[in-house]
Amino acid sequence: MLARSALLVRLSHDSPMNRIAAGVIVCSMLGVAHAAEETAVERNPLDAKVIGDVGYFFLSTDMRVRVDGETSDVVGSDVDFDDTFGIGDFDRFRADLLWRIKPRHLLRAMYFKNNRHAIRSIERDVTFQDETFPVGATVDAHSDLTVAQLSYEYAFLRRENYELAGGIGVHYVDLGLSLGASISAQGNQASRRADANASSNAPLPVLGLRWMWRLPHDFYVGAQLQYFYLDFDPYKGSLTDLKASVVWQATDHVGIGLGYNDFGFRFDISDRGNFDGRLRWNYGGAMAFATFMF
Image 1 (spheres, one colour):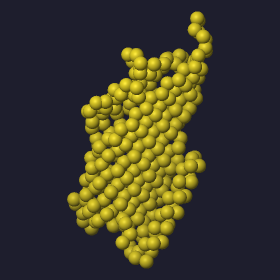
Image 2: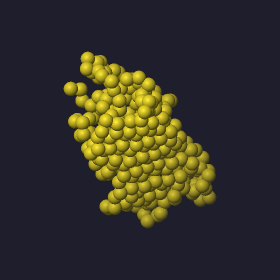
Image 3: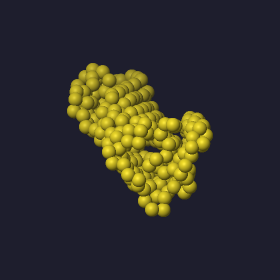
Image 4: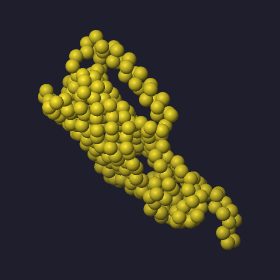
């Protein structure tokens, strides 16, 4: 029997790499669909063997960060990374995979990547790690974030028109931040080059609930909540992932969906030599997508 699975791909409309990735994924989905064609019957999101959602995501991000000194006791500036350095969204990519091993047993995986970069003349002094970037300096800022998740779910309530599943899993967060600038001569100080970077990565356990309900006229409503709190050196903070969507299943194999997703984490990190400070990062927004089921 073809493994039951679900695939969610979120792609930026202006990224060539993401369009290539989308092509590869869609081709893979078509191959799987061809293999399942002989046994195809009427599908819905509660029992479909393969689900693929591909669409446009109207996301916005918000990141506040403070990075303290690595070799000193300097307290870094509390900075809104997006506003201060004019960073927009680049290379936005997210994929979700759901494999239904048995009717009540599922594995879920997620991969999200958001790399951003901008160059701007800053309007305030910014202390980042052991460097201070003065007002007027032209700063080259980078923010690279990767989040991966793997979890197991059990559908403890499963009926013809709804399913409620609980899960436990782990998120892996890999974050890298860097600032660079050429500092002009001031007073008795000569011109110099200033560079600072900070990174952190850690596996973070999560608990979650997922619910789906079949409505009349081939509409389906879904919701998902994942939450985690940690207070263990060098990390203290929380992670949340909320998603809600409604899908109209226009045919046995094609549906149209709208939804909203909000993902964020807030951590105080005291990892000297890598990242010592505070991080608040969030993305959220509406989704418009097409659903293909086989």
